[in-house]
Amino acid sequence: MLDLSRERRRMVDVHLSRRGIHDREILEAMREVPREAFVDPGYEEFAYEDGPLPIAEDQTISQPYIVAFMLEMAQVNPGDQVLEVGTGSGYAAAVISRIVDHVYTIERHAGLAETARRRFEKLGYRNIKVRTGDGTKGWPEAAPFDAIIVAASGPGAPLALQQQLDVGGRLIIPVGEDPEEQRLLKVTRTGASTYSEEDFGAVRFVPLIGEEGWREDDRIRTGRAPSHLPTRSLPQMIGAAVEPLPEIDDPAFAEAFDRFAERRLVLLGEASHGTSEFYRARAAITRRLIEKHGFAIVAVEADWPDAAAIDRYVRHRRHSPAAVRPFQRFPAWMWRNTEVAAFVDWLRNHNQRVRPSKHRAGFYGLDIYNMSGSIAAVLDYLDRVDPEAAAIARQRYGCLTPWQKEPSTYGRAALSSGYRECEEAVLKQCRDMLARQIEHAGKDGAELFDAAQNARLIASAERYYRVMYYGGSQSWNLRDTHMFETLQHILDARGPNARAVVWAHNSHIGERALHRDGNLAG
Ligand code: SAM
Image (cartoon, rainbow, N blue to C red; front, top):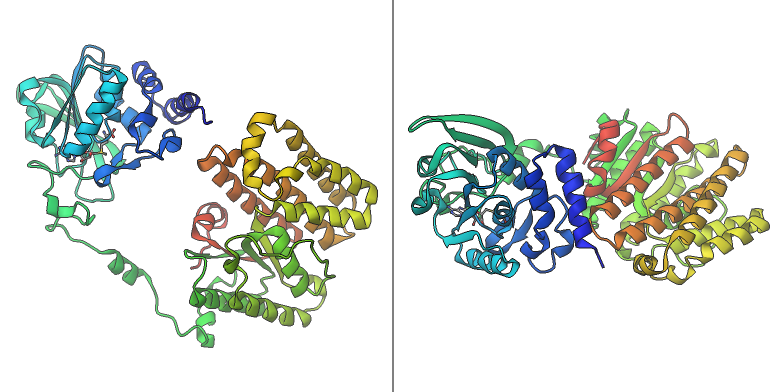
């Protein structure tokens, strides 16, 4: 079971303290309020990631950091009377209630207000009053307020709210006409009719709908800016950025990508994992980069041992029949399709003419999932070159044997039975393989590189499946890191002038590789 109170403490430490939230009362309150009680069922495990989450009525529970940031801007103190506009899930009001004496919170959706009220009751938070209505008008009977926090973005700071501030009171509100980005404003009442303003930077909130906010038909649900603003729709923006290309089979299509000929990495991202047209287009661009511009690496979002079978085929290397046929894992259609088969055959034919053979273009897998295939490949290699080392490796990987078929269950088991043993064993084996690589540098090249890469994959996969059990972004980052490092190893192995085309989902090629080389096509 995920220990949510531990996750909560971690969230406060990592996402709040370390990012500059210093107010002790706020940090303490956020350590106390169980955010999981304010998210919709099914989202509990994400409650302590620092992001907004969807709630009913197309609304969101705010990101913890922004809740803390707004409270710090508002300088909320024990003894204060605070108004919140936009109750939503009730989470922010609950946090405020742990710091101040009285909280008033207004929500325009009756269903959300009622759910929040029940949550407060259940948790025994008795100093919060909830009302359904238009919060841009404030709560005049309870005014003046020491602080007013508005959790939705309006065209400006509503006058009614400014007037309900006590002198010295602070109003925090996101304002701005762009639905994608607003400014976080702090308005301080300095006298009976004087106010000062500060800007605390860019934020993004759902719209404030009401008399002194936006009209409902201005942009809610459509996500469009109000009608008096100049708008550019998504199709218009795409239309302005794209460039017409000839048909895929027309040679001029691939030639259009000659502009990337000098790049070290060309990243061909995709979003669907499979339209025929995209696969054909990607293959045409890649053929051109290989044939005319000397690219010799095709690195794809496939598992290493599976792609290695293709690599042996396209580079005319010794075939080593794997225990399991490659590309059996879901989504099998991603690689087992006619477009990929045609590309693979083309690459094999192309490579036949390439001399010396070490310059032949290879096909590599960056992904992490086929742990059992990788174990089989390491053992197969060692059986051939060093049976004694194979026996040791067999013993070490034996630890993972029960989970090889269903590695996703390993994480759960590792929790109860301890994983140190498996972790140590696979790391030792990985180190041995890397030491062997150094020792045999120059000999056994591609085969030893393949085996070492498999040993790396097993070590990453052991960690991945363990971390995956906790859910969240850590396992995702681990997988992306493994893919990025694998690409680096391939580039290193193929020499200083090696250049690669990467075929992967947009979510993987977006950040890391871009940051490194800054070359993106597609
Ligand atoms: N503070 C909330 C929490 O912790 O879950 C998050 C609030 S959500 C980002 C913004 C909320 O403001 C939505 O629930 C929306 O329905 C509400 N809202 C928008 N306009 C409003 C208005 N004029 N009066 C009251 N609530 C409003």
